[in-house]
Length: 501
Ligand code: AHR
Image (tube, rainbow, N blue to C red):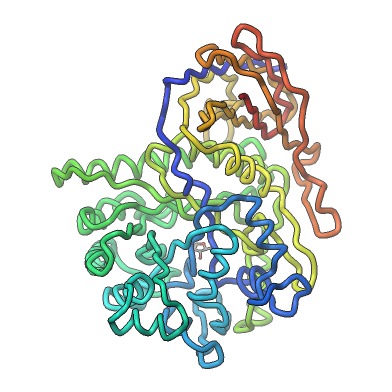
């Protein structure tokens, strides 16, 4: 058996964890909206057509904020198409996903859904084919109390009180050649600055997220952030990061080490923000919004085939990744990485939430079930709120295709507001358990109250509608704490939640 040590101290604090670290994302893409959250006529649909089984599954995840309506979709979207009487809303060709958007669900309907799901909305504006004028108009529509063209239109459309949307994304992945209205860093920085300025003049209480690179693998990564921040630093609050990983070659050790890249990505963007701050002699700190992260690769081939057959249908079954057990382990490590960087990452959105690269799946007309990745997210969202602690970890390491010295035990720790401690660990070792000597002496009298574990003997095991409980968490016996120390066994290839009170 391998051995590791983890030392925690109540005074070694990284930062307060922003609850919005457990955000998610719903895009008008595939069956996320139509056939996902919204399916009038489904036996479990409510009076507004929202699936209550999906709402229940979202509520169990405790998602505090949901990014909407895109994604790539937003770069060709006209927000006005999505408000007013539903029967008068236009059908539009969505050039991001080669689908017909019917606009049956729009701003008002989504706001109602988010309320039912217990989440606030993070609203993305179109800076691809549109600009600052439409950006200020939609803020006026959503957030201004009344007495102006767009706020009065909102009231006429049945919503007296402002929606009060606090966080706004200034476009989406504007560096990507696939994006409608792609821009250079300078062009984007200018339009983001002018939009942010005008949006905040309408509602000074909002926060805005500027687009960083669409991945750390973009050739312009780094220079994009530097150049666009030169133009908009003083008017924006966050820079976005997006990152998806995959394991197309079946290299599990290499796949599970991908969070080394995620960590580097976060540190690089933080450094660039701070470099611009220094150069501008600014007093303001720009933080990070990791507003798209997940595993994404299983469905790519299938999507190509769907588009060959049936472009322009409504709600094509796109990006329907079926997640396996190793994906859940990487998602667990991604959450651990976000927690360890909670001093700078204030918002994060698991992309996405329902059917589209999602923890929750539905069958149109049928059931709703949780994918493997649902569980680490649910655990972190439930037990990972409070203050992120700096764990001092001594772990065995391994080398893999892209990284050397990858810790076998990946760890984050949280001091919860009731004085308890949660330790999240992934044991990345394929075959060996690891015995962890956990030092909790500084906390005084703690008892271990739960050891949750997610493990399956087959890394490719999945959950399906027929077999929804194939990969689900179980509990292990709790360990006695003696003299402030506990010896805890982490099974080979496992996600662990160690809870102390
Ligand atoms: O989440 C799916 C897509 O991935 C989003 O629309 C886009 O922003 C990213 O490329």
